[in-house]
Image (cartoon, rainbow over all chains, first blue to last red; front, side):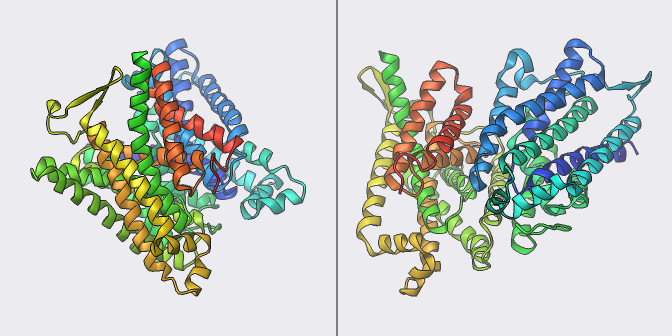
Length: 288
Length: 288
């Protein structure tokens, strides 16, 4: 039972990551693999504020989200001018730089040692030490992010994003400053990823740089490609399927080192096979 | 003064390895017109093949190196035939090819990690076997000088082949316009297959050189690829000599940066170079 709750929490976290990345990749057509970087910024800022200053969880989480948003805003001022594959390389670079900062800025992040004993959040005297109670928090967050993403999709803002995806130049001709729209959605995506990061840090109660590598970004990316780009339902279904698959590997008795590699192997294959046979994914609306 | 010479020598060696990467990369890019991310992993697979034959099976050095180069070439050839060709005939967008190649990269890295563990391994059998030369007060090993000479030979050979042979002219024709090339009777599918074999074999050399110079780890496939991409963009994408120029320039900046700050920031510095070039001179130093 405890184990099922653990899986459910993971599904919620990856669901948030998938939904927020889908806003950038699926709705706007920007192929980004920097998501683990923002996820990490949220996790690190929240963890440092909780451990170092003993701050209230929600305040720390809000500051983590704001920090990630600010970084995204600054960086995307530069990289939202890049197009197509160059944008992809810009985001790869972003993730590698974020990861090297987590790893090498040892006086703050403690480098490869990571940050241990991060306190679990408490609400109104009710502490969320129990995994089941934490699951409620994670599920509520997933629901909020789901509604935000559906709201964005249905708004006029979302329609501009979709038209950037279909034809950026035509959208510019209609008078939209597309780089501001790209900047805005990139920042929103980064902030939502930081929310997942804050939850992750307090759920596992320990973070280190290895959770925020470029491979993690590729994993998040492959979950939404599987679920279907441009579909909010798909962005939750994809993470659900892949998280279950990988927990299955561990359940089948592979040692954890091999299980991690099997996980990489599986999502790499998933990407190749999807591209060959069903580039739209399961519920995708957008044909890349 | 000694430090300056040692930095110059280190940059020279790194530049030689990067130029091997970029030579293969440019060759692939000029015919297939997409950023093949799987190429980095194929290069590393060449290095691991040498590790297997030379260190585990105890074969002779040169025959293992030739086998390693051959295996990298065959791997590239097969991946092109099984994955990229069906996508190309279906007129899949470059984003689909890009994502498929991201999958290839992930799969090969995971397979290498399962077969050879994700530990850091070097190809040299013993520490004392390589002789060291002194040049103006700086040190360079015999292995490093072989790497340097190989890079120069491959560059010259590739330049000559592309310029003077029928094969080179056919490759150029495909690079200009694949459809017209097939109209005048060039079997473009077959040519692209050969190009993938040669390009991946050159990549394999880069992987083997990395293995002898610094060492192998499954994850350096991506970083090797990124160095190649950065060098290609800096030098002007698709240009043989421009790529080599970019490779040496990148190596000099990286080594200066590593000396000024510290070695861990090399990747971050490389990316800053990339972003600067993409923003201010996206066509590179020597545009094609």
